[in-house]
Image 1: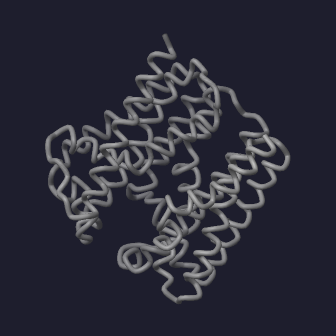
Image 2 (image 1 turned 135 degrees about the vertical axis):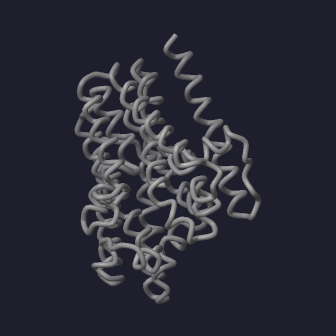
Image 3 (image 1 turned 90 degrees about the vertical axis):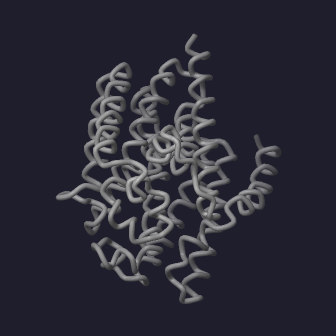
Length: 317
């Protein structure tokens, strides 16, 4: 029975992710997204930004059909949705200054009222908390910590995303790596393998946040401060190179030690691509394009990087 419900949950996540991505791509191309209530609600949850990676990280942490996954997926769904929705709620005025972000943020565009937004945020908190309870005390406490920090990350007077060092520390815990950590804790999978993989994903999360702050350098300078604004471009780029190098070595070490499959060399190849793109961006002098250059052509890079990885896997698995 659990397998049946788990299949339904994964299918639902796939459908939500598909439409979320479709609307986001259409929006970037100038196509207005649907304005019916269900679509507005889903756009407020920003599923395209997290749903695919969150699902992948759950299975990376638990590469088997564990009965507890039937609670992990919905708990993570509402927790991740709260993180992105509460960020859009408190960034609505700043987002309104950017034409694209104004169309994407349903609060900035006026498609969703503030009272409706508050009600939905409260509902997301309750669902994210109560669905974690069947997974045990540790998962429940971790959920409380996540929901509290998600609020503090974007909301005044805390506004951790606008504080030096705290912006990186909170992002490393909240974004990208959290689904892996939650799954490991909730299902009691705190092995050396998962601990080292979590460290790897934290390093990647720090790299992503630093790149985003470099991209938004000029916009952020008008409203708040952060670590990249304090460090300056030169030190920020050196920090990104350090994070990518550490990620490259850690991922390679995990494969060589047989703690993970050779398929994890996909991470190694992506680190190599990003190191090249970060260095090329620095050489060009157009520092704000770092994030765009590094993540542009992601599918093409994945296909190119996968060829030697798949060859290794077939030869040495």
